[in-house]
Image (cartoon, rainbow, N blue to C red):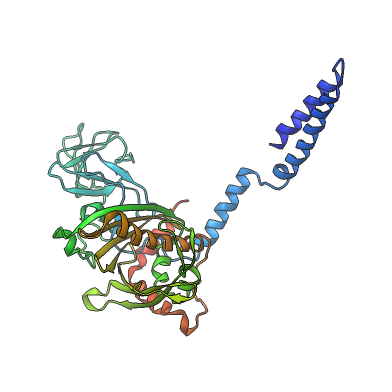
Length: 407
């Protein structure tokens, strides 16, 4: 920018010097261009970093933040956000779990394979097609079934037994949550848990009411830790905001009373966050504003669901995280409610308030670092207890995933 304005200064000066009848107007233009040149040099030339320098600084900051965090992809079931309910194959990003391809067989069953063909490395999510119950590579037309076995090579009499792409277990979960995959529990291995189904959705008592999606530059464990960090509620979630926004409502405060409980036995992979809340206006408690919320963390916060009890019925909100790369989550909200609850008033209001409060954490998550040994006091909440519970979702294979990430 400064170079452009400086060039304009030179041009104006030349025009003025060679003008047959220099005028005050011409002199004014030259002076103005000169001043603009100085301003541009000061603002853009001396203080703004070169774009490549800014990119390098951003990457350096990202690496500095990421270096101390746990592995990017804890073991669990994850939402596959790009699964089409047709038969067209599609690729899924997410370096932590490897690049995946998702497709439906002729019988309608969803399948997930490693996307890169084991033959010559073509991406099966780009340009391939489904043939019967197999996916056909666009490069040499090798076909692979849903278990990853190569079933046909058009120019060979027989496909080698070892010609196989890695397959992944798939669980279709309440349709709009689509399919979930778990990084280390591939073919022949049983997953340690299966997400519980929601009875009210299966029976049709709850109806689908909407969605909200976002990308957040954070580690997935940070969201889980929020539930045990009781002392952050007043600073970040005490101010009530307009639904779905960060616009504060003057004088309106939310008073929280929180608890965190880990599951036991067959539910050891689940943790519960309990929140009792009521409203205050200008320091006075408002009657009939008491509300109770229960958040169930299924696995490593890859699936969470919230139950909100109201006088008119219940609202259910799914909140899922899918790591796409170190410190980047695809966050998806899907919500259902009792048929009796007004859609455009209460559901929008309740869900919108939750998402507004969730947004208050984002600026913290996107700029903080991981404290391996945080200095805590008793009143902070059961943060260390949560970390011990969360450790079950990491393994030696999780660490390998972390070390093979590309930037």
